Length: 381
Ligand SMILES: Cc1ncc(COP(=O)(O)O)c(C=O)c1O
Image (cartoon, rainbow, N blue to C red; front, side, top):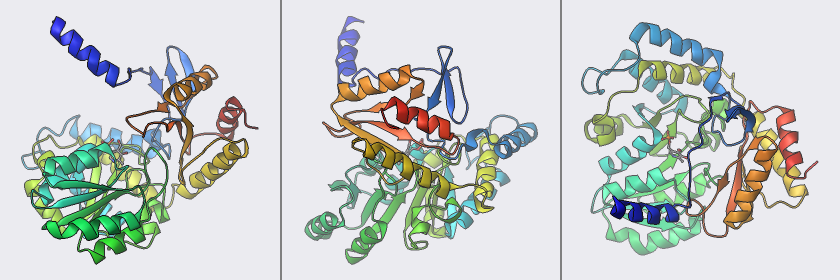
């Protein structure tokens, strides 16, 4: 036991003492911790859909009809018509031939890449790509090469240098970056991909539901529907539910059904979750969600912070306030927490050394009072 304690203490030091902090309850904009209510600026429930009556009613209906679990994997008897209905709706939403639902975004990225790429291939990834994308690339055993964040010219240079050494190549990015809240130059990256014979994969986890007409994402917003080979996204953020999807060609989807291990070797998502995801997509498709309004509020919030000298980044509903050193971010987060606002510090290794930050996620559920309150806590207004 002692050996383990020393080993774990060392790991804990490296992990900078992250701790779980349970909330006893949560709504779209508030959480209750240790009996105190906080306005939540750390949630990805960007549209406040997790408790929307349409999602709740859909989930309740599915619960009554199917019970709690799916009972088996999709390739066994866990495959239900409602899974296919969701996939068909995703394909319509994303304007692709087909779509496949995965049990989470993490499982999607770690399943898709190893199924499509291997030892003789290369994956060129933006430096700030999410851990799940990088883990997928590592699992695929393709050579992982990083290009500078949002820098198509750097990508061009490294492709000119390395592309010829590999059989197939993938360029991979997020469309809205989760920690910086900025957006990838998708059209420029796609042009570089095409010049060098690469496939292009975009993770729309933080764009789905918020960007583009009816929240279809940045690929659609930038007129690139049908051009990007692999468009991945999640139901777990703006769509308020759980799980993820890949929107792609029928050929790719059929291949993944037979080869993506994170799809094959896991129990299908419960129908209650699928029904809620379907309800969320329908709300988007009927124009009932208002991603544009959320982006406009985020723009004003960002401007107010900048006006008082804060170093604010991003170009989305995610507003990082970069303070530099970890202890400054931790102390700032604690001080606004004392005033009833939860915005957690993000520090190395999640972000580069010297760029610790407080990440504010704005959601449609925040009231004007919540926004002016947190700005007041930061000395703005
Ligand atoms: C860019 C990105 N991709 C994938 C994921 C994983 O999605 P999920 O939480 O559904 O596993 C996340 C967030 O967690 C993310 O930020």
